[in-house]
Length: 142
Image (cartoon, rainbow, N blue to C red; front, side, top):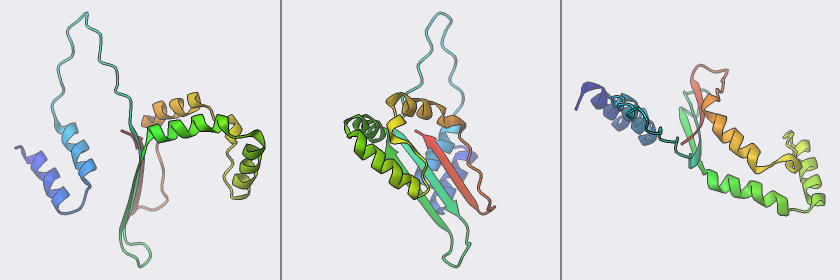
C-alpha cells in the first residue's frame, strides 16, 4: 500500500473525512487506465444514481463543528417530476403561490423531465460559494 492511500485511510479513521470521500480520494489516486485501442468505441459515462449534498462547518456558534450529508436517489427525483403531470392545474397554481410566499420562486407547471436530465448532466460544473472560511458545501451526482 502506498503512502498516499495510507494517509487517506488514516484521515478516515480519525473522522476527518467520510467513507464516500475516502473512496473518491482513493479512486483519484489510481493510475489512469490505458485508452481503448483505436477503432473501438469509448465507454459511455455511467448514468448517475444519486444526488449528493454535503455541508460541513467548523465551530461557528457554540454548537461545535458539524456535517450534513444527504444522498437522494435520482430515480425518486425523476419519478417526482413525472408525477407533476398528474397533478391538476388548480393544485399546481396553488402550490406555486405557496412556494412563492415562502420565498421559493419555482413554477411547478414548467418542470419537465428533460429539465431534470439537463440539470443532472451539468451538475459536474456546479460550484457553491460559502461566505465562511470554515464551511464547505458540495453538490454533485454519483
